[in-house]
Image (tube, each protein chain N blue to C red):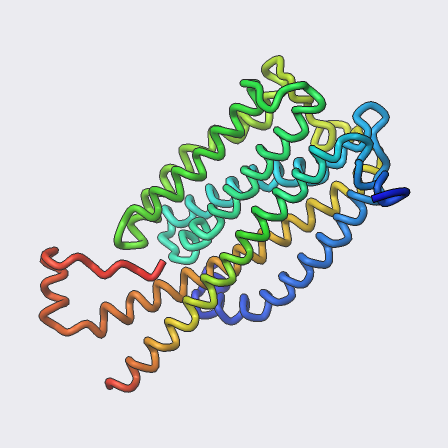
Length: 58
Length: 258
């Protein structure tokens, strides 16, 4: 890294605190969003399968 | 009017339309917020660039308190009117609130180290927010500790209402006690005491976090409604002797897919 980009990433000497703060927030909130989406998809698929079976049996 | 909108079938219809809008709007507002926070906002004259942690820390803290208040109100509605959507809303909001509280604590720690010289101090503000985090975890554990979802939700509702006493303690901890944490500079009588060049990015990030909460809440509520429906179907379609045995308690109820 050099020049402007390097200076920007250095965050005035606070890079070791600013970037982990943003990275951690992204990981936690992004992870929760990903998990929520997976759970929602799985529950939709499972319910549709059950409803098909239920209708077939009647 | 509440019961007209809080019908589960109507909720599923309305939320199916609202969900993609909320999701894309969240991404757009957070992207703008991050650009403002990381590029446009000026460094602080005392704290330098480390002040950029504020744009995550403060909105996360607002959401930590706001989501708990939401859970408490929903719990009250669930206890008084026994409305199934209210307890589902409370249950779906809890992991989101816990995540925001964790982000608030962790970013605060990363901010405290360079500014105060300590990752953590047992200051009234920090300690009361840590208690809030444990309240969230306790609520989640309690709600999921029962085989029957509505029994867990009722126990959780009582805990959520008792825990509300912590909210004013958090809010006013910086006024009541001599804390290392600074007092309020935005939500105070007499208006915000922060320059617009920093206030605007902060508010944009706060709106982004609020939209994220709404999106994840809708996702979580829809998932929980699907799961409850599936559980009811499975119980209804079970062979009759099996059902009788389950009522006797000799056969443990099938655990949900969660």
